[in-house]
Length: 134
Image (cartoon, rainbow, N blue to C red):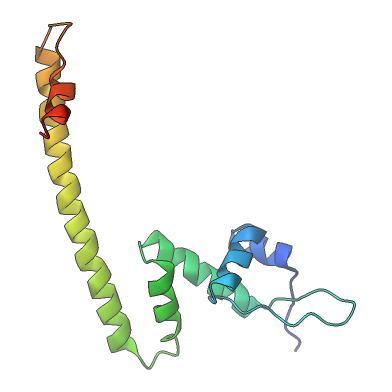
């Protein structure tokens, strides 16, 4: 049984990305660039589709391309412990960012609340707070 081969455009469609994204991944070393036959065009496989989708799913979870490259190097399934360490580091970073965002939300909500209470056209409590460094 022969494996179906795709042009870069077809790869992009199947993986849900544009051609420039594929080229970017190739420049970053995340996706191999197939050999170009003499007088022909490069062809990609279903494995390339899966790899691009893996990269996109990793990005959706907040992994950087460097972290995704690290995960891809472990994809043979024998390195689950290392993959878990990477995921735990990312989870800790996400939780830390959520805490910071929640603090920002509380501060901004307070500023907006005080702003609605202020009817003085010449003074804006939000601008004043930003000027004084909150």
